[in-house]
Picture 1 (cartoon, rainbow, N blue to C red):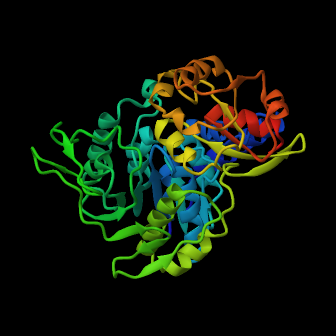
Picture 2 (picture 1 turned 180 degrees about the vertical axis):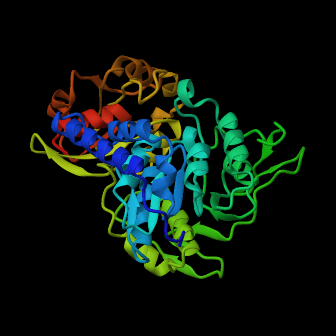
Length: 412
């Protein structure tokens, strides 16, 4: 435990109250959960509020390009076996959203916090976490978050001297480089399907050799560390070599990898793998992701994919052809305004699926699919796309704001 904290100062209490009021006004106006505006108001009144709210918690930070919202949810579920948890479960992962979440956790023991990659070092400095989970790094919103090697370097600098236990993916060279500055690392063999951002050595710039699941730089010797936890098929292997079965309601190999990391985090706080993994089964959907909804008398499964690595993982878990697929892409501020990443996605994996394309940038996506040699239809909106899709459950894959648009439209 972090011990008892000092009671909040009058200024901090005022900031929390004002933030909650601002959030309530935002909700009443139909502008979302209000967590971000509430946090901004609170931090304006007390810039040190995030640290004050975290001081009584055992804080766990989770950051990655893909999977951080789901992994945060899995860790929170596992740690509830050991005590009350406060978490930013809906994915508001910048300082304002995190502050709003922690403001509701005065009785919690653990704070399980998803953190946007760009803000990890600053949030770690403010909250003094007991554990930090690092899952993967790949290209995403280059116009905002910068190149992956630069981001790994910022993490590496920010983690230097950290007292936190860092639970890190041994299969991602960028994550290993970022975590290696930390004195206390637990390595997890969680896998890495997307390798296009990890062919050069983060340490010296040389070419990485990749024999089997291993990787090593022939020039400087930087190499994959020996993991103490591993994902092995449908099992998590713990440091003692025991195999624990993974039973999830969430689909795909990527979520098994998230469960393996989550089990390692839970064990850091004394929750046994069997207990942690059993609790993770409770998670059916995460902020609407993986939900199956009925719209226009058709079943639709909603899937979020924000960048090339995420699309690759999503293609691996959809039902096979001739299952109909709807693709939706926007390029608003929260997505990143550059759509050049579409050319890094291997859309030929959708061959044989009837495809409909919607979203603000449907024509950008249409050009990409045309070049990939796929048959598709461009539709005005999801209503038209559902109407012309052949029978069967429809797989709907969308990037961030397109996903939010779809959830509002289909009533989820």
